[in-house]
Image (cartoon, rainbow, N blue to C red; front, top):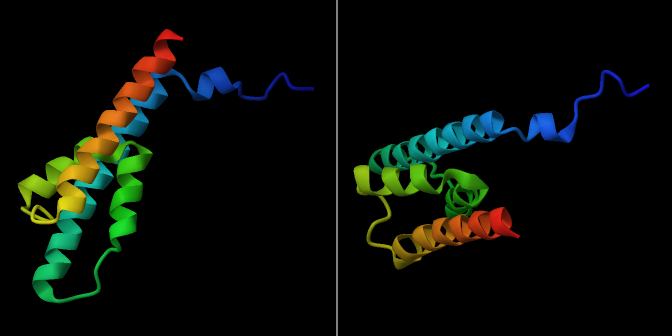
Length: 100
């Protein structure tokens, strides 16, 4: 009955996790560029919670790289402290889960 079902271990393979992280970080970088562009043109902006959500979902490297590449949100302590803190906590969590 479940012969054709995909196993969770297949979905969460190292290859798939790496692909996901690459994609979410590209999205994080892009969304910072897009928000900066919208800010320059005075258009509708991407909510700050969305920027944090992308970071929490694993896009911390991309959002931080985008923040400094485009000099966007760099004067907001909430971002200069918050985004790296989320990334560091995620790294600590992965290391912890790896060794328990």
